[in-house]
Image (cartoon, rainbow, N blue to C red; front, side, top):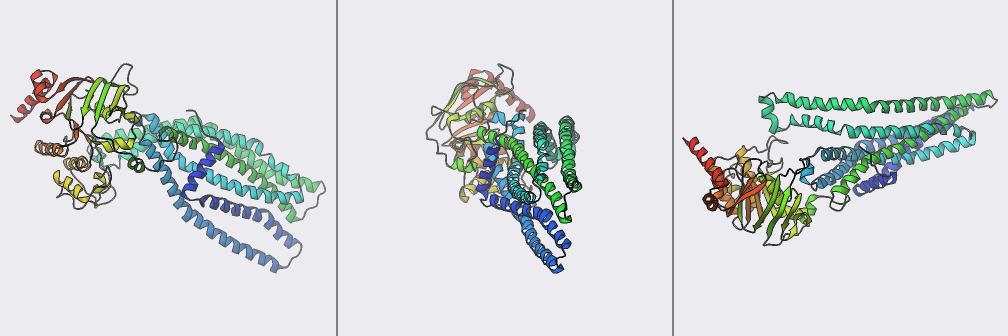
Length: 604
């Protein structure tokens, strides 16, 4: 995959802006911390050591040496106290806030990704890289910038000393930069490519790890041998990762070996060799001066190389931050990172005007990757008016769920249009459609939140409305408190419900919330016939003045709707009331009679 990246300056500016919004003192702390740190490094390594040796050689009183040592000890105690607070208290708190900020922006953008793209490997790989790499690399930019500020001070301090003693020594310090910067930049590009190549492998390993602690998989893992297949997924990811490390790890290892070996040889050997040559050629040095020159050349070389390593680190970080920028531009509503929460976006969206008219005109849909000309839906012409009750029926694979996804804009039509009040659904803000469609899908989810939060998916509701919905579905005796936690994911006191009870709780969402258009996909699949009959009674009662559309395989539930849409092979082949379709003796009559006879045989 091609590394797009962004410019050095863009990476720095974006990182600083993100950090500034969270804590505007963080940048100053980083710079100040590194200035003090590098000051002490050079002071102790060059000035202080030389001063002590000169004091000893010139016969200064021990009291002067002792007082100097005592003063530096006190300064060290204060510095390390501040240093430990900065590292162990302040930084962890800030890093959590930074991670939270980037996470919120990333997942809000993910909510804008088209559904048919959301589950594709390309997006999932991109999403994982953005989540995994953005925060560490923003931290890298900030720490590199702070280190560079400190190194500038250190280089100035060393340069001031070396100029006074031996100006030519500085030229020796510059030599390692000839190779270090370019080799480091090359190895970082290889590292970025490696990171991209192993993303899918990491997702496979993450999936295998996740399956073994998610409760919905526990029973099958215990009762079957499927766990071996899941372990194979992990092994496959690990093998793929090993292959990529063998392929791309070798040039990275070689480049870093060259950088470290040659660099250390020159940085360590050149200062000693230079001073030795100067002494042989007649220069006279005190021991303190000898140590000072050697140390100053070494420190200058190390710090200069370190400075350019930091530049390389920022350049490397710009590749990863560039993926975050591309992600935000592609999926955020305004093309940048200004969205702070999905709730703000939803609450700012005005309600859609009533009454409404929902229309499909020559709509068709083909899933990504499908063979050319292979449509999941085609030639869909449909009108749904406010207050209508509509059922969608057909065999498995007929296109029922895809049709529902088109109607609520979870998928966008490949051909034709889906319009609400004459306006294409794609032109509405996501928040408007979330508040318009109340959806309960067959594969619904309840979350490890309070019962209240699981029901209030469309904004806060009065307790009376919540208890009324809970009582209607027959769960009042099972729920002691609206604020009790659902599931035992995070607490042993969490509420656990059976499959049928979970479906009833999910149904309270469309009963309690004020959705103009209710869509249900097999809403009673986990219920027995008697409970199903009661739930449908409640659904029709709750949707008395609303539009209701539902998918059902149990055709006995379709007798009470205004209209039935019969799908076959991705097209609407019949449309009408139950009585009209039975009298027509077409495909619906065939399905209904077949199911009726099956139930009679079971009764016998």
